[in-house]
Length: 343
Image (cartoon, rainbow, N blue to C red; front, top):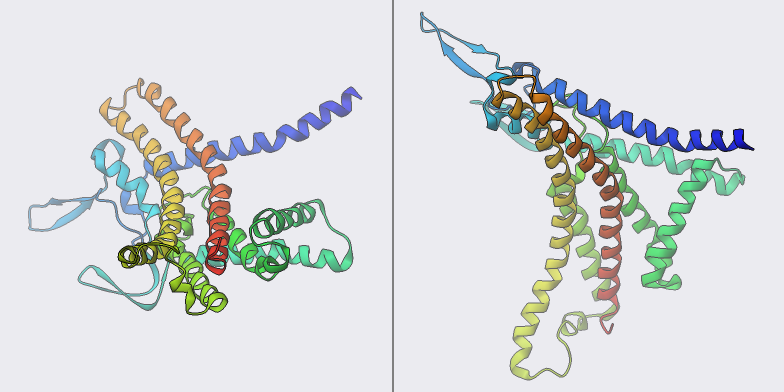
């Protein structure tokens, strides 16, 4: 019995140990990348201002590689933030040092969205197959439980079973697609350029804005379908004095478009902020090292910066699922309220 308990304890702690090792390795890799020459970065990524030109005797110039102690304080943060900026990776032209993008330009955001779609197929196709075969692995049962939770606790709890059944596939896709994009952003990056820089697609307003536009179109379309032209009439509360009706109509119309705007900013800002805070903590290590001239006392300032980065990383791991839940649940409420304005 004691041996069985010890074995269970080891199994319980092994994922926690693996997570800690992953975080440690990731932060060490970031530190190694931070000390690499800036000229080794891929030209497709935004270049930190860490290279200068040294004039030579015959009017020629050569690029000097700047290492950690030769970088300015601002360059530390620009270098760390560079992988959090969207940039084109295919389908653009370069003219006079500027990138000219077109309608077919692919940014570093899209490939990670495609990866998420592929992972969703790999994860959920066995879930569909388990209903036919009657056999399911432990992981498949866990994902089936997540699907039932989204259906029962999110969709049915707001829309009801009869009306919400038609919306379950939509909100299942919305929740898991956002969650997969959030989670994949936690995978350690080993460089600052594609494909070795893992990018959180929901860390840009273009992606979150697209999701919010889908919610807005469903709010308007289903609201008008359910209530007819009275949808806009019902925006104004009944029983108001006639002079207040135009003012309230404008306020309610603005609030209708503010809802998807809030969805856009909330998801984008939360996902981007976590990465920037971690990158800032790593940059502080190099900045304090430079301030102390590379002395051995630099290790004393590196420890709290490293600890802060690990702490924020753990919090961000929780925020990834929380933000997917908030975005999906608010979308469900906004759409249902547009369909049932009397509530």
